[in-house]
Image (cartoon, rainbow, N blue to C red; front, side, top):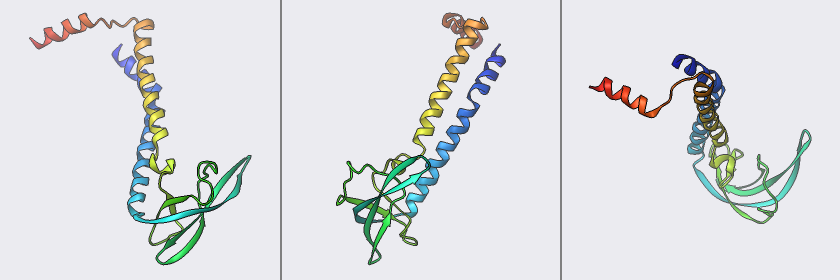
Length: 159
């Protein structure tokens, strides 16, 4: 019965384990990337440009900041709320010294919690798979999960 339970748990949660690995790897890659992007600069959101991708329209800010004495005006890759960050808002910019066009804004959730969504979904999925496995083992498979019974068996073996 235990082998059947473990097999069901493995089958029910294999995709979650893959998702967990992807989330952790994403977190590691982006934290390494943050280490390389160690230079900070003060920037200003100058304007917003509309970007269409498929059926969706995004508002992407144009950020102006100074890197190595050169004033840059670049389009940010992620969309932001124009209400939350109106034009003229000062922002902290982190950019790569070797390529200042590769930058991100401090406080952007994509960079603050990389892979966080995948990790949360994977952990919830794994816990749900475990609970479903125990439920099926007890109520469908007839497994015996009496705590007193389990404790007596463990204590007998320890003597």
